[in-house]
Length: 236
Figure 1 (cartoon, rainbow, N blue to C red):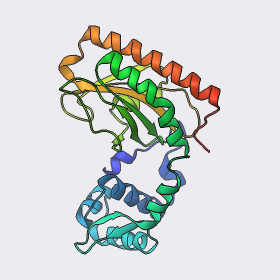
Figure 2 (figure 1 turned 120 degrees about the vertical axis):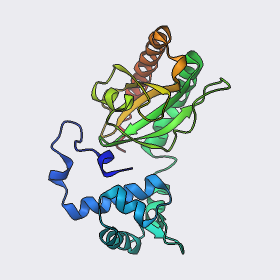
Figure 3 (figure 1 turned 180 degrees about the horizontal axis):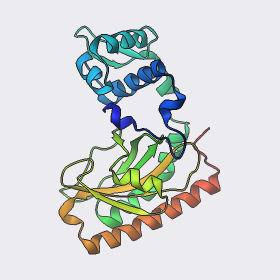
């Protein structure tokens, strides 16, 4: 993840940089970079953050001292014990787990109706993360986006989040020769939520896209209704 992938805007609010002191922004950038890479050396962290290696190392050492990152004998950085503890406390009964459980039947239905892999993603307004999936039943299918962080700019997901309820299609935005179609739910809290399908480009002809768009719209509408009835706001 590069510094440009962190984005300049959070929704329609003022630029994020205007509200975040530079030193804090650099620390947060490095945490996100290490988490996204899973294992990250100093050179990669410095390049992705736009910092010099000396400056990046100073910040990473501070994060290591507080347990946010961990450094192995080879000098590579990964998620630290503090970050892992916080992540563990948010699992199971947390809002994202409840969202994923609620969405799973809808994802399963969408994958069956379209023949393509279906995904659920959440976004903080700068980056999106896929948190649940239902794989296509076809021999050749798209897999592997769960747990992945993607930039909003240029992606179907990012465009869909700007206009909830609309279906957006992009090819090659995240992976070459892969077409993605996304539709976002109206705001339910601080996180943006969207449902997507993804598959080989050659399976997304005009008729297929129309059929997939109808399925996406239907599934998103019913998922939104279910979440509103349950009172889910993704904040508690």
